[in-house]
Structure formats: structure tokens, C-alpha cells
Image 1 (cartoon, rainbow, N blue to C red):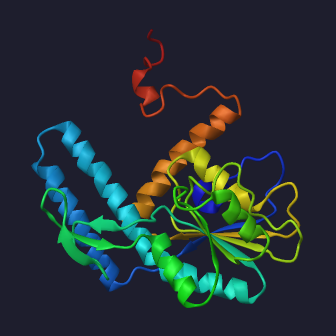
Image 2 (tube, rainbow, N blue to C red; image 1 turned 135 degrees about the horizontal axis):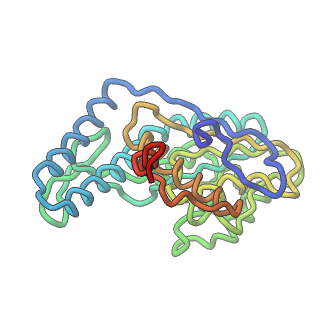
Length: 274
């Protein structure tokens, strides 16, 4: 699939650099946590008689496991960022989660508490919050391209582009359209690390385009971190594949196949019949 191969950008000028999909392993602890969350939601779905309720819980299952998957990639993203900075580059890390995240089953570093409905939950800081602490503890300055109620995004972008902060942490919404984070001088190549593929096809396209513009002077490298055995990553690939194909068809002026999803052959009369 185009998504998995990294061939994602439909641009008026070539992408200057490389887009790689990097597979990360799943250890025993991760497998058990994921299985526990899946079983929790599957049990809820099975108990529901309403189709709407079943779809609701199915959506919650996907979103919860996407957020869980991001948690598993934080340390790897931090390690790769440190290596790239040590080699003279600058790094942008894009993640979906910022504020505290809650899960219906115990997970690593989770603090037990209660939901608004009184159900037990385990809370952990969002991926961006965790990364912020890791970089600050390492003495590395961070530009915050997220949470616009707290940070002035234009000032944070300028800090990054001037090299004052070698790392930028961004959400797809704040680090997408209208933001330039590319190397316009040619001395600080950019590494973009993506923890989760945004499910909005156009936003996903825009995020990847932040490090490759008309004025870019050095090759950018994009590393999309994925866990092949993670339910959330698998579902994200499936959903985004469909959306990107649809987006490409619209952008190319193609007529969408209105029969998509149906077995067209089953609706056709046998030869010789009408």
C-alpha cells in the first residue's frame, strides 16, 4: 500500500528527502497490555444490543489503542532525536497526545484513578508531555508547536528555525498547514519523527510537507514509527489507506467509484441476459 511504502505526498514539486516506515517490536509486556485493552472493549461490544452502541465502543477501542501505541514509541523517538542532534541536525516529533491520557486497564507507569462515571482508569502523561520532560532533563531546549492556548505557535516556530531550540514537538493540527520547519540554510538537516499517522488524509499530507518546501536546502528524513503487531497502528493504516486513495482521486479530478465496497459482478446479468 502507498501508505506503508511511504509514497504519500502529492506535491507540485518533489519531496526533497526520504520517507521511511520503521517497524518496532512488541515485547511481552506490551502484548499483555494490548490484549487486556482489546478484551475490555470486546466485552463491552459483545454486551451491547444496539448497533450504534457497538460502533461507539468499536471506535473507542481503536482510539484508545492508538493512544496506547504512541506511549510505546516515546523512548525510541527520544533516542533517535538525540542521535540526530548530536550529528548537527534538528528534529521535529509529531504526536497526537499531549495532555494526560486514561486507559481502562493497567499500563506501564499508569496511575490508578476513577473516571467521571466512577470506573477505574489508569492515567499517564501524553506522549508530548513525556517527551518534553525527557528533553528538558537532558538539557535540550524544546520548541512547542502544540497547545496554542499556552504557546504562541509563530514564536515557537521562529525559535526552532533560528536554531535556538533543536527540537520541536508538534501535534498534527498545530504543526500542519502554514508552518515551515525546513532547513532553509543547508547546515541543519531535518529529521521528522511521526508517532501516529493522523487519520485525516489532508492533515497527514500537510504534516509530511513541513520539512520539504521550495526553499529547502538539505535533504529531510521522515521516520514513521509503527508497531506492526499493534491493533491501533493496523487500524490506522487501513483507515488512512482508504482516505488517501479517496483524496488522491479527488485531487486528480477522477470520478470516484460509487460502487466501491460492493461486488459489482454480483449485480451484472449473466452473458446473454439483460
